[in-house]
Length: 137
Image (cartoon, rainbow, N blue to C red; front, side, top):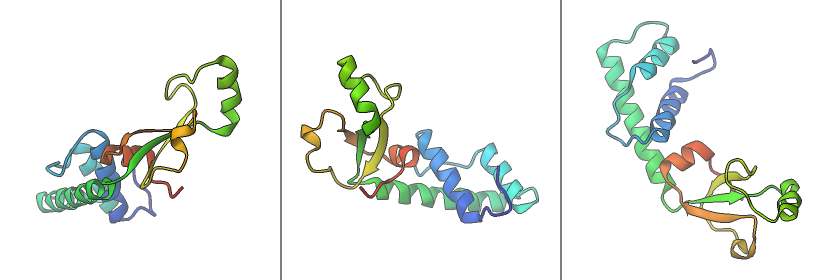
């Protein structure tokens, strides 16, 4: 749901991220939940033109997210405070139960190949960026 400080751009971004996480591409058509959020935002039931505008704006936002995810990497990091217990147990465990964190970076950190606790999972997808977010370091 939206609140008084939500902008139309926030709504579009939220709809796009949600759609991407569900595997949508830029042919996405706004769903009932998106239209409910738009009605919440505008205070009235949107007409077909408004729904079409929302769909076009969400499709543009999806294209931008897909473009922005190009060249990014999904990195899995083990927080420092959990490393000793994993070392004592003699295993890394499996994400997400092991407490690791995932983040998308535009670069592969130096020395990650030698680090037993941090590694590149794969090239990031738009869904990864939407789910885990971008980090600067």
